[in-house]
Image (cartoon, rainbow, N blue to C red; front, side, top):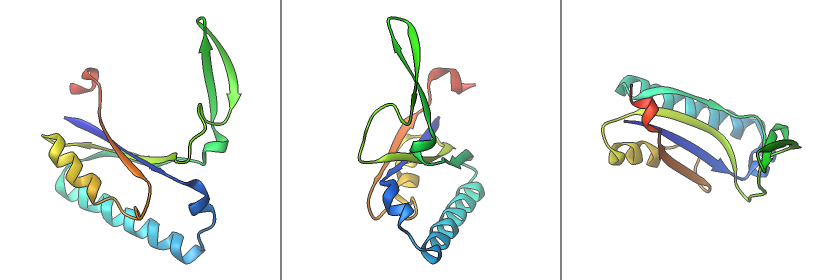
Length: 118
C-alpha cells in the first residue's frame, strides 16, 4: 500500500532558522531518505516552496476563481512530503515517527487512493 507522509509545520520557524541549523535539517532528511531507500520503501518526495508562493483555484457553483496563497489560513503549512510503499499502516506510522526535525508540527499519514494500487 502506498502512503503519503505529509509534513506540516510553522513556516516562520524555518524562515527564522540560521544557516547551520538549516544544514542540519537537510542532512537529517538526506539520511532519512537514504534509510527509506535502503529499506526499499521510498517512492518519491519533495520539499515544497513556502505557502505564500501557492496559487489556489477555488470553486463555487462549478466555476473556478484564482487566489494567491494556500486555500485556507492555518497555523501549520504543508512543507513537503514523502511517498512510501509498505504493507501496513503500522509500518507507515513507524516511518512517520522517524521524521527528522519534528520537535513540533504534524506528520499526516494518508493512504493513496485506489487508483494508485497498480
